[in-house]
Image 1 (cartoon, rainbow, N blue to C red):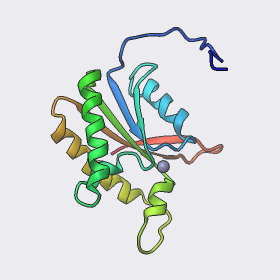
Image 2 (image 1 turned 90 degrees about the horizontal axis):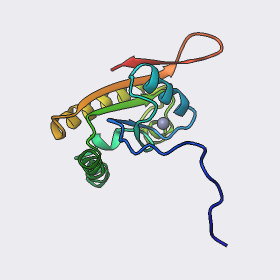
Image 3 (image 1 turned 120 degrees about the horizontal axis):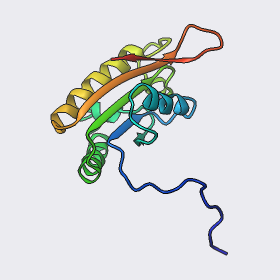
Amino acid sequence: MAGVVYESTLVWDPERPPTTIITCVDGRWYNHFQEFARQYLKAGTRTDFIAVPGGIEPLTLMDLVPKDFNFFKRRLEALIESHGTSRIVAIAHQDCAWYKARKLGPIALDFKDQQIKDLRRASARLREMFPGVTVETYFARLGQTQPETVVFDAV
Ligand SMILES: [Zn+2]
């Protein structure tokens, strides 16, 4: 029988957050991204959130895989128009399985260079497409301390 199975303890707030974060789906990083948004980005306790494996990578595929590019672009256009988004923050992360799986040629230990290249390319594309929107890019990785924490580099 269908029906309510759970009621959230949180009160509904209809106000839309101005920031959209675009990241990979990897749940190991989720809490770190959220804390980064609150503490460093000062984006408030809530943001819009787009998570796909590999993060902003589809925005680099206009020529290579145009259907992936267009899927992502159409949804971003609709989001920005209907939500009034004023800021996009794209975050890539170390040890991303999407980049590993799609790597052609010799296996490297990490794909940071490619990911940073993609962040730059995608953010240039975002700025072209949405001139009124602020675009920021970051790379999340493990820090040097023990136990390991997560640090964010501006890209
Ligand atoms: Zn990933």
